[in-house]
Length: 331
Image (cartoon, helix red, strand yellow):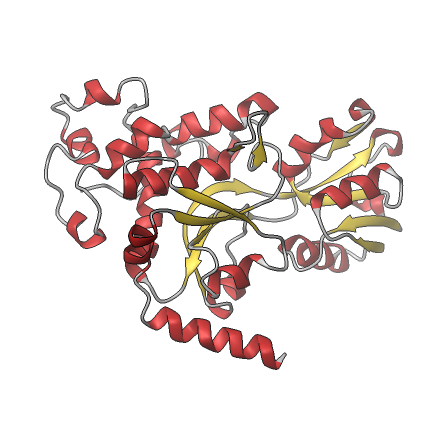
């Protein structure tokens, strides 16, 4: 406990004098904390390269700063180390399916940026159990990962409804799926997206289902260490720029031709019209052009990484298409 307290005090002191952008530029790359293995979000392809939804937002930040998406060092962090890695300066940004909550935002020396994925907690169960509602899990053993909002949500939801259960604590998503398939637990609960993309990894995926019932709100956002407001704004506006680009129908395919657009919103988006406030970020006036040209807009990032896995956008549609994805005006 004393060592942890010292580390946190040191990290807070460091953050008071932080200039992350200057450090990143001098280093020549950003250090991005990521999930070691989460299908669709962070995996390694056949070429040995990192790919995924979360990975693309690391690449987008790199494009905004270096005009190249490849100036990134990926640092796998787990449930236990992700926040300490951020607050201690081991990573510059955390892009790892992390829920924004009050206690995390105020008590860990970190700050959340923009929400890039809206999720919710659900349950993976065998079809043979014929589960129609969560009360049918009364008396069940349920695999859950410790130190997560998932663990707290499970306890809150079941205790408030007097549903009895026995938690089976597993340290990682992989271990949870193994434990579930080995029937060490009757059900597994985590973010619905993780369940949907991992069900196909089971030996007989058609024998299992993800329940429709959602028991929580899980706004997933990139996070940075507290104390460097400019860096927080850079990461935030990189995420928002991908959303705004989709809304304006600017994508990788047409971004060059869109530089000739007379639409004032597109001109501001791509930096062809000077935009007040950009200088305060320390980025080039056309940084969003490089983000879209090299990584794509939000819809492209989602389609490239998650649609092939069968994930529907649901709440992650744009606000004008029935979803919650919304960017403040770029003006």
